Length: 323
Ligand code: BYC
Image (tube, rainbow, N blue to C red; front, side, top):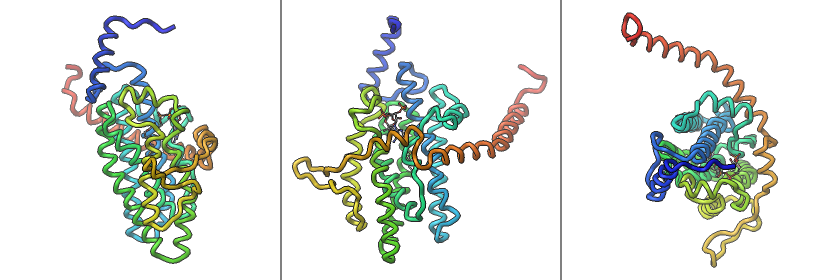
């Protein structure tokens, strides 16, 4: 049975709702309902995990990039993703959680990360397609999060989105270069787009009717649009880009609807999304194994950093012990 709120809690809640309604920001020092805090911790930490796991599929191509220029671009992009993860873990820590604990929850499977990173990257064209479609979907989803009601999250998202635009452009430029190349290169691009199109649509989450979190998250100003609204926006933005590139999107139902002024499109395979989210995608086990290995191999770095920080604290402490 729900515990009745005290008069004090009711007043605090009314103040909280007024701040959200005025489209102002909630800051870490402010009172917030427990459900709001929990939802933010869930979404921000899953987002952080996605950035860190998201380094793997493209990272596989760093040592095999076809030129120094392509290697430098890819290295910069993957490093940006590490940075995004760190901004987001820091934003999550303002809500009272600990990054080391969140990492443990990722590695144990207790917390999720985006379904998209459980697909393989067998072709170099996948580097371009991830930039174009995956980062394109990320931008669609994340630009509205710059206006999210929680201050540290919205500020992290502003910086992340600026970097995501570079990521999307480098992907599109890479694909455009390949499309101007040989027939074999054009076929590589098309094959890659065929594999990534539907998983990219799934990044926006389940259809609104099956999205248990959307209503509350919208009420609290955490999310600004529903999953289906953003999916539609992504399709409308991407179809003209596909035409300019000269690739076909693998959806026979994709067609301009003049009445709606938007594109109609087919239904993604929601059973596949559920399977991938539950851990049964093509690369789930591999991604988590890799993350665990990297965590174990990085233990000495964490120990060294902690020892260095402790030495700094000891040196800064006044001589003669406690003051
Ligand atoms: N994959 O009620 P719903 C990037 C889960 S990083 C896995 O609609 P919500 C990038 C959902 O968590 C991309 N799980 O949830 C990085 C929930 O489960 P729980 C990541 C998914 O939160 C490197 C359940 O399904 N972006 O772009 O209202 C290189 C029901 O869903 C997925 C973000 O994290 C999924 N696709 O809406 C390149 C953005 N979809 O937690 C690119 C921030 C749903 O209740 N996050 N689930 O057990 C969001 O905007 C929202 O969390 C979502 C889901 C739209 C993803």
